[in-house]
Amino acid sequence: MFGEIVDGAMRLNEYGSVVQACWDDIQNHYQHVELDIFMIMPNHLHGIIMITDNVGAGSPRPEPNEPMETAHQERGRGTLPLQIHTLGQMMGYFKYQSTKRINELRDNPGCPVWQRNYYEHIIRNDDELNRARQYIIGNPLKWELDEENPANVSVGAGLKPAHKIM
Image 1 (cartoon, rainbow, N blue to C red):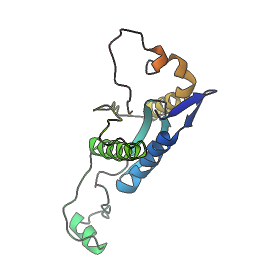
Image 2 (image 1 turned 30 degrees about the vertical axis):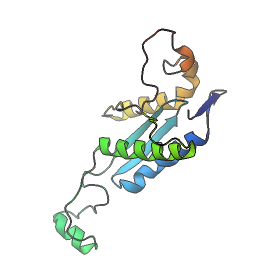
Image 3 (image 1 turned 180 degrees about the vertical axis):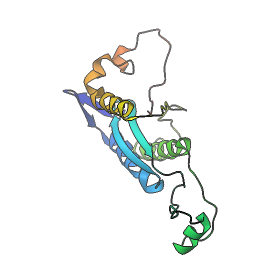
């Protein structure tokens, strides 16, 4: 759906380019995150999101010993309550935006693009982070063996969700 693997490299199609743009846009809406390694595959994707601040999206980080309300008032943001966004909210936003744009391109409103949920794993140290990065970077080279590759689905086997987010 998002492109094809050619000589071990992912080549995005129009829908894959939409997914890339929506992924890149996550940090414009959630300022407490940094996007790390990301790889779109033909029918799913893998990515690492680093949550860098527990204060909340769009919220200024207070100086030491400064109340949150002061940080808001002094930086012109008013005194609205802080809102902390969860990974689930971020993924929901990403999936909603990419689905809406893809369906506009294919003139097919309301058609699902993503499975209902996503796979998440908390990366706890640098070794895990490096292993996850290597896995994601090397994923296109393993596409021929990937269980998500439609060419590897057995006839009569139970259907699995075609799209996943990591």
